Length: 90
Image (cartoon, rainbow, N blue to C red; front, side, top):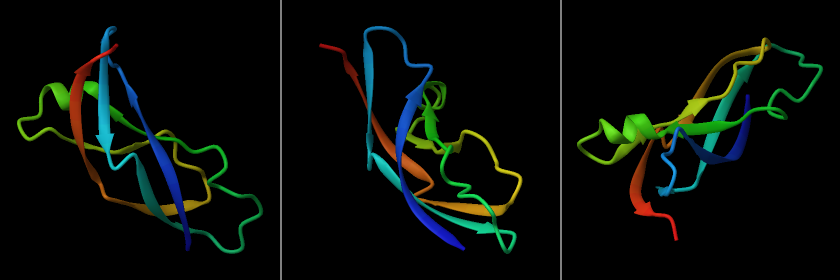
């Protein structure tokens, strides 16, 4: 297992808007094949989609992984749902 912390970004945000997310980082627990030759976490990104926020009644959004490396068996994101607040960009 590998445990790492990652910043979370927002995709599909309309121009002139800003979506603040809380917390801004997630902790991810990866399960991988053994032994692993490369750091599978090196090129990963985590994001939320504005469209999920737009259709949410609670203001919470799920976190997505940008890609799944071939040596990764599974992963868990904590927290898996983030609080979001929409603001006008200044």
